Amino acid sequence: MINLMENDMAQANVQTGELYTLQLPSKHESITQLEALIEEVADKYQVAEDVFANMMTCLNEAVINAIIHGNKLNPDKKVFVNVEADPKRIIWTVTDEGAGFDYNNLADPTAADRLEELTGRGVFILKHLADQCIFNASGNEVELHFKI
Image 1: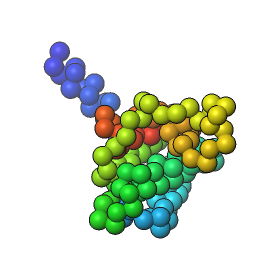
Image 2 (image 1 turned 90 degrees about the horizontal axis):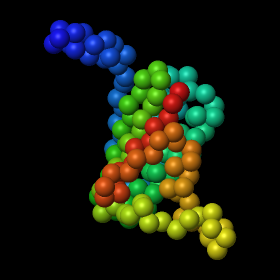
Image 3 (image 1 turned 90 degrees about the vertical axis):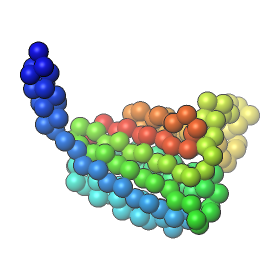
């Protein structure tokens, strides 16, 4: 029985992915490095244009939010971007050094009284464009899954 399980585990791990990581300073210019990484990963894994556009939109949103709202543009704080990629999916994790936020109690950006607002759509965008969007308990980390 043990040999069978070990064999199953070995087969399950045949398709290993690659890991990428970025440590970005909390400034708007960091988006350039993020976009370069998104393009590099998308090219390597031949990501379709629609998925690429969704990844670019979500990650720009997540990292800008981490820089502005999480780290409060503090140059001493970093935003960490980790990527786990394989031929079937790409998982992006964005973490800031801020206190986090309550992602369960956000105003609905599609409510009639909120349609004219210029902000407050970030989490809505992430949840609708990524295949899966998972926040950690404190709200200072988001994991975004994209099927490719």
